[in-house]
Image 1 (cartoon, rainbow over the protein chains, first blue to last red):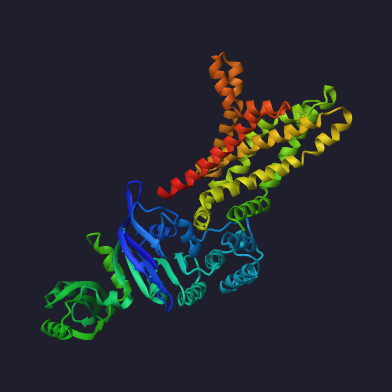
Image 2 (cartoon, helix red, strand yellow):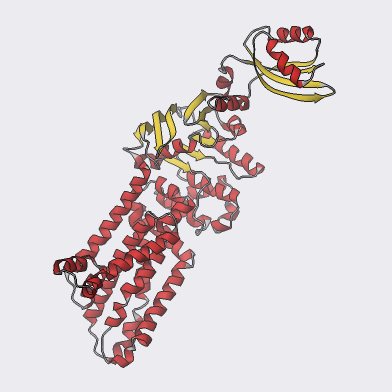
Length: 319
Length: 240
């Protein structure tokens, strides 16, 4: 159970997190995978550093299992597994020595230590690299060593900062599979700027922008709650892109043109949002007929997380 | 395993997995022996004393100790491993003491390797074993204080080169400060203060073969003070 209330953090005069509140409850039934999504500099890493007791918040509260990050840092550190950004590892140690250090730090000993180490090594696919120096490993394997380190003590809460950066597509699939498996029983909080990652593994998402939460909920909730807009995709023939751009706002209920691209043979594909009316399709059809345009294709689309992300993270810029 | 032990073992492994420990040990042994036998002409000196061997130690330490401690925190920060280390279930003091003990052990191993020197010359005269033990005690205390200072400097430096240079300057200053009292015509009370603060002065006092508790206490206070300051630097950085 992670609770964050009106959290703020300033670095000098720069305020990286500007009043963020959310909570993540593991639930008895099993775990939950929550994604912190946002562009670079949105405050994801700062929130994570506060939750893992690496930095103190400037104001507000953050707690893990009712333990406060300021008062009970040691107890929190014991129950959290953490993979920092870029998976820092000791390059002058071997994988075996490194994991031995982490296991000692986690106070694992004897048979349990061996069992947990073997499990983490197996889960992260590190068997062949076990006796290699970490400085000889590729970025992908270092990332896996970092992940093995984070799960070795079987933590109830796992916090991963950009767990798949720098991995190749196959490794990304493997790591996501592992995260999904861990998330069945544990609370996982991961940060990412990759939208597909959230759609692929997270049951819930917090979209952060410029130190604030721009949206939160399940992917479906966020998509639905998109200020009641519907999205249409249409391919029209009989006018060029510029005159379409000028003409589209004539449709009753039209809101915003998202894209207009040439679709070949004099046709133009447009994507735009409209008020949530039942007869949106009819309105577009009538407008096209009125303008003597040929409607080659018309479809109502669901907002993808990508559209939402772009929309939310650009709204503050005044664009 | 206690947190301090875990950090201690990891630090020692890091030392011996990298060339730094071997290079530093070699430098130390060669330099101290060359100094003793060739530069100071021990065999021609007609004196059954190891004093000249030990009196060069503070000077060697001004370079040797920063070379051992420069990586301590600066490298952790540069590699990002400080974040890992400080989010493991350790208290700040566990990590600081673990790191300190690892470097101190390395230095103790180096000093142990010099034990053949007094043994090899013992046949040539009547050495006072008590004095030699006192001298080893003094050098260990001096080393401990220098390591605590170097480790603290590493914690406030952004990279190991500046940690090294800054460490050398500070150690030279506080080792040599007592000589300022004899070079310049300083007021007596001021010279006394400088002497009291100087690492070299207390060390000179110890290697005379008289173990004075005031000198021992001085070194122990210096170690405690700088390790404490080191933990405060870590806590301060959480607020940054």
